[in-house]
Image (cartoon, rainbow, N blue to C red; front, side):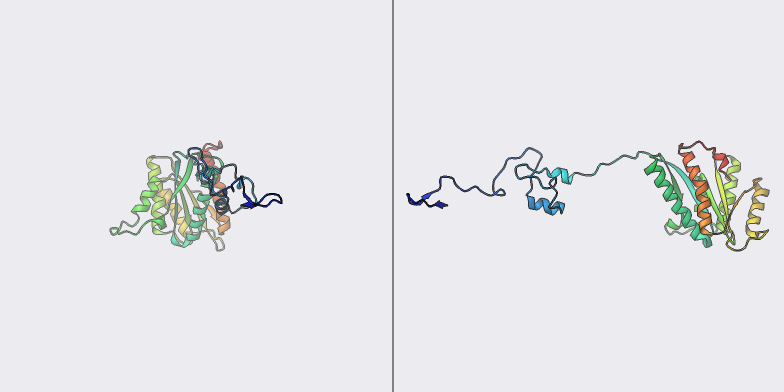
Length: 253
């Protein structure tokens, strides 16, 4: 670089040119690394935020941008084992019940920070397997033995396995092995009649074999079933989580 004077000839400039910011080496604190403004813009996709575009004199701490999100430990959650017992024709009501479990679990853990959740065993999610003749219901009956709450749904017919699940529940309850609850929903989309043969036969067999009287809830539509289930399941879950004082015996049907 040269400068021109009217009295003296051109002479070299006393002040050498300053190197650009990127070419100037700079010592940085330990554990920190700086990045250029262009790199920062590529990472943040924001050219106007001063907090994301610091001045050149202030080195940028990339660890702030790349730091992992905080993790909250959930610890051990107690589980309420739940089983939905229904014939294949009632698969839509089974799906509604499963969705209700997901919503209530979200409320318990994410809203109330409770240490309990509903755990459903669903045969539709089980892997394929071979079983011996006459032992098709073994997995379902084992699920009944582990379940604290059984939600039975009876439609136009009572499925063979679903019937075994209900009877097995009352057999275990009669032995007094553990506190058990069963809610029976009668799905009657057609006009209701005085005698509903599949349901009447099931109720009669439970009463004669185990001395238990089933008080069931009639539902006429999917929306009716969803509302009826939530009215019972929500206070039950809150009571089991210790968030409300409701006797569970009053919710058992």
